[in-house]
Length: 98
Image (cartoon, rainbow, N blue to C red):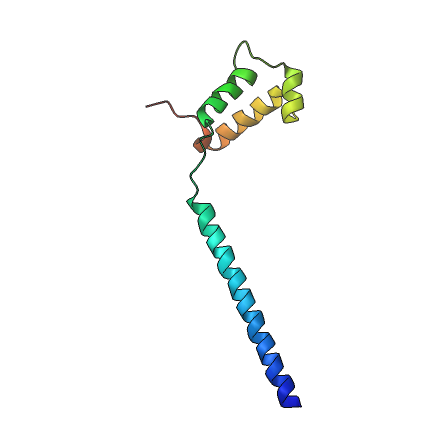
């Protein structure tokens, strides 16, 4: 009787391993398919230019109150942080266009 039980358990273990391997293979195939999909154009440059126009240049679209609601800080505080970061690390200083 014990032999029958052991044989049955071995079959269940093999079935569990096979199911696990199938699921793992399917997950890998889905990951590969996701990687093969083309990138979507998101117009980063236009978004950057719109952000600058709306919040940072003369004749801005949104007020200081709008800035504070959007970014949870005053515009002056943000600009002070930018200046401090640029002073502390030259990496963040904007380079001239070449």
